[in-house]
Image (cartoon, rainbow, N blue to C red):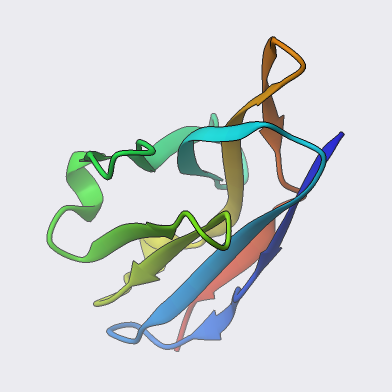
Length: 119
């Protein structure tokens, strides 16, 4: 079984920056596409950014030009560099990974990390 361990959330002022990390540990054959989602109170969980194992990226329009997703395949870790943060970026951020093991494929979610943008 694989675990996703997230870190890097916290409180930041508008215009500030944060870097989230999500490391995959445990038993797996491959980590496929990795992604960051977020969920604000009263809202549905939304995809923020994703990155394939080959490095192709995708972003929701509201974060384009401000957030950058990257990954280190040797460390099985995905990062989300967030800059020019706005109060509307406040949410719990979740990491998700596609995983293969013993010819099975499934998705795994992290536990979430709170990001609060406020003065």
